[in-house]
Image (tube, rainbow, N blue to C red; front, side, top):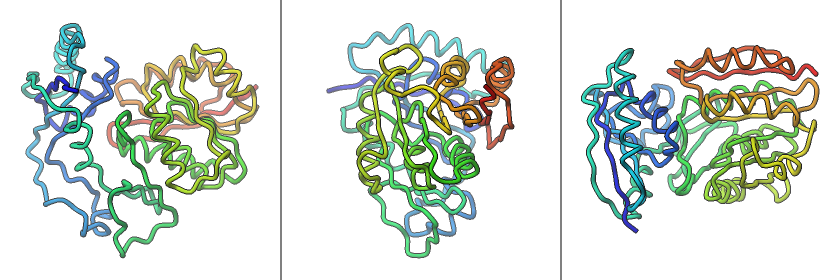
Length: 319
């Protein structure tokens, strides 16, 4: 199968916002090419054996996305060009041009793997399945992930924010609902941190297949992690299967525009006193999410955390 590849020529300063713009257009097959160092200094010291050549950030970034050949691209490109011009009002997007190419199926599916390196979240090691563990790593827990073709590793910042919150909230024995589970990384982290069971949902069947495979890779016993494909916002059958007022923690690392309606829906699945953790929120939309949570009488906002350009919120069900 051939795919159309489109490259947005932008800057490292704008790449998070441009990636968010692509997500809003329903584009998840994204590859970021820049010269930013992959590691923070603490992690770099641990992974010298698997690190790429030292990079010097030149401030430029190419963001590549893919559409299936034959798929209508004109409306998507028009929306992206308009969005890029809007972004120019508050961030340097650089050239902002979009060039087109053609690639084979196996090319884009595997190219991004060169950019997925092991990283640490506190003393938890997150690593791709295809790379070895360096001998000098001292990690309390290890999570091995192969996102497959449907879901990338996600921004390290949003993953870290969610795992930090899970570490704080999990005491042992909790039931966790993971909406937009993707590769299953948050459910797997929750189970390894001591949760009793997890239920993951995702609208992408390829993502749910990857989540099941990753659970097996990480030694999660069958029955502890249930994964279903569907949209919990609209699928009543899925809502019933998920269950009502039975979760101690709900976590979702997706888009701000989805989190705003989602925080109204998921309260019916939470026990009184249960905790909601949401991230994947670019800083420019953080206030919209904050206000949505504050306006939800079933939730009490507990706090927020920021890492880079990304924000997470934690709230508690009060009734």
